[in-house]
Length: 83
Image 1 (cartoon, rainbow, N blue to C red):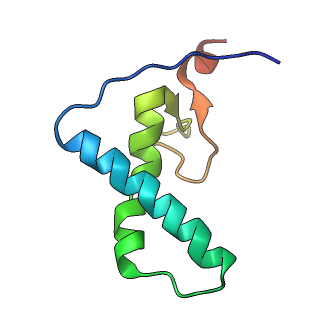
Image 2 (image 1 turned 60 degrees about the vertical axis):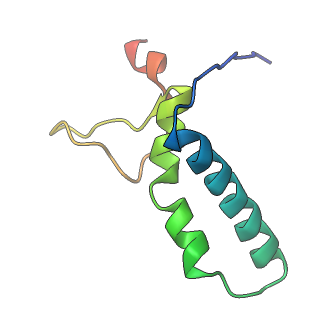
């Protein structure tokens, strides 16, 4: 098993956004676990959270042959593209 050390800095609004995103993920997990309705507020906090978190820790989605990000592809570590 390999390990990866990731450090990043959060500035200003990012500090609160991180807290909101993680709380929304927690709420989503608890809500679906209990088969309750997911609120619009939870969805709002999760909107584009994947891209934001991926960018903070060095992940990206590969581009298609036209140079556009493939929204359906799994994230990869940025340095894997260079291999």
